[in-house]
Length: 375
Image (cartoon, rainbow, N blue to C red; front, side):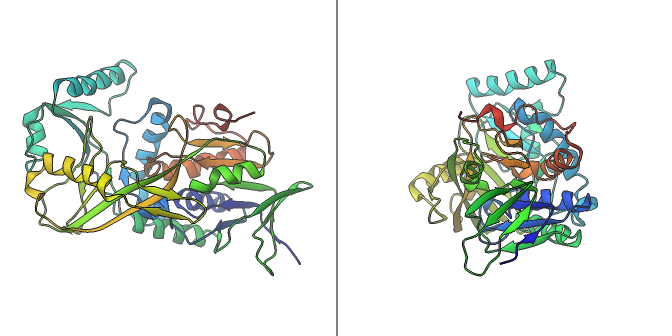
């Protein structure tokens, strides 16, 4: 049975895998994306699509800031703005303790030279979010942040990757990775399907990335997230920024279609073996309560759909981006822990730098696999 040979095999057809394939293909490499289900099946298709630098961990902040610049130029990258609206992201506080945390963070950022976050008072908060009912003491804001359309983003990155020459194979779950000389052989275990052979492999397998990493000798502990979301019936325009709450699990935005999309990291049930995620309605109700406490005007609207998506979470809740420790020619890009959507364009560029040039100027020094490897 003859193998099919490429320069790079990318495992995982989520947005990060597509971004990596796009960048590598534009760099002149023959790339195949191997996706066990279909493109965007799990985290990428279940995301709230926040494009956020607000409240980012310092370990990934510089990378997120570069990625934000890319989002503001997205149409030039993939031929579509991906529905990105930069109406800002706001984190509100309704007690002194939590407002103090927001103020302390902005002061810390200023001391380090960052200016992307500001504190706003209740008056400006009301101007930006007039429908808010709670008495908030103020908020922090990142004015150039916003949100995008996840399905437009998936379609745009797929279309651009294929136009650049990338091959996408759906229904191709990698079951075994073996070294053969200078190459890696990736097998599905499906009768009649030849292995894919490539000298370079990128592990962008999302919630299953720990299993892929273990196949090449990198043991990286991961938890599985099943972040839950809900969407409402369509309403008249009432909200432009994305609103979160310091101290409670809430992300609250209105889509271009008028629906409210409500999340915030509340967790459902996950099963990697069955590839399923299940909503826990009792837990999700906490998000609904946080939303109605801030916006009493939505108390009687209907929820039309709920869902959860599977993704990987690292111990420090920062992604793993960089060369494998125990396998030459393998690179990891996973573990975004609920905040990977905004990083999509820059991670594709950073992994391409590493593969094509052997190094990158992009700020991944805090994110390399070695910090989490179990020896």
